[in-house]
Length: 479
Length: 54
Image (cartoon, rainbow over all chains, first blue to last red; front, side):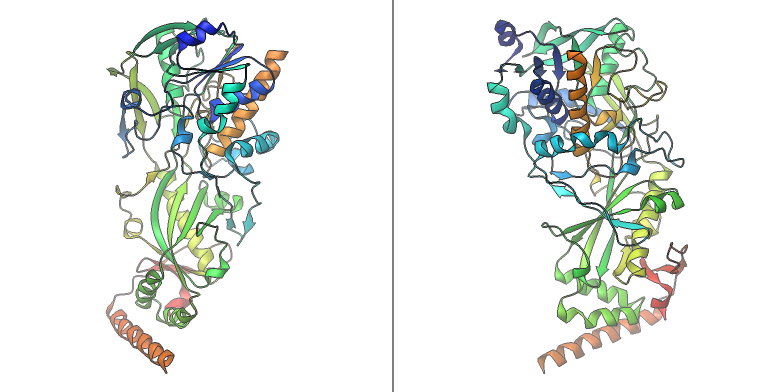
């Protein structure tokens, strides 16, 4: 059933056992799992079917530290959440992404990749993916890895019929949760805002917060502030350890035989470091994305290479007639260490139309991020050279150790952390089942629960974890 | 004949670039050897094998 607002929902008399807040990939996954298990569930969406300026305004906020996107641009507020503006790149995190790595502060999830395997199929079904192929080493240090481009499904469109026709599910549009009420052991109600005014409250046995990698922290910080900490009673880590994937174009490459690379249908190839290389160098995970450039780019690179390695350049030029040579742009996206100083706070001086403080995001890249970029790139270049697959040329800002350029991608629009998963409430907010520490009925879905970020796009992993959460919650309710 | 000329033109271009290269100061910066033991240097922003510079 789909309701345009909370008033029409109330008229229906529907009694939910679970209330899912947010209809993006995480909220949708949890709702589907509960619905399949026969649990009456209501999913609240603050936006509607279409994006509007008025709705997006709730997402405005401020950023200090490194340059970052406007917070009302890096996310979108309507049915289906971020699935409405994602590029579709997918990959499951590797097993080593979940492990404790002594050289990365605060690393180590309380779950392993194996704990998620049971829900990979469900996540692939949701995102229209085929199974991923295993990593293929091309050297001791570098693996070919597969990213699959989903058709970038819009989840609101994909599941509209299911939501509309299923009597056990209620989707309520135009209904924002302003804050939760709790008693220190459980959430008792969620207060609502709809169509420009306060709209009462909703009760349920369980609440699942799936409002996005920034908004999850905001909702819980504000709820705690209003209730003197009775919604997230163990809040030492709330809003903290926020992460992104820095993304820049730090190099180009001249590839000697384009047939030696496994290009996907979009003309791109992806590589990552082996766990042994990361440990040896004390760096984090990264993803090299090679994008073939037009043939003209080869000539320019060969000419430039001739200034420094004339013999190699002449040999390369000899093969150009056969069009074996290839130039490639190198995009690097990499892991960010979870650090408490990268955090979300509430800006009491700036509030949205509902009176809720806007987000102040404090975010910067550190020394480990810079070293991962430089050494990771060098590692990849050394593999190209050692195997005579090609040669890599750093951009000037890398070799001159200048600051990151401001006119490139900057980051992946991947909002992670803030309500991270762990066993110690001092450095985490939810447990291995995504339940808030100390609370019996408050759960969190989405990439805000990531303990560390890995190097790959987060949607596949967050969707998998959300399916697992939905299954676990269904079993909990039935028990 | 056309292929031969194209090749000659290409070599001439390379030779002129080589002459230019001779005036450039070498600024090779040695890097740590990777796991496979090949020594590499950075020169002009290029990550090269030491043997490339001969």
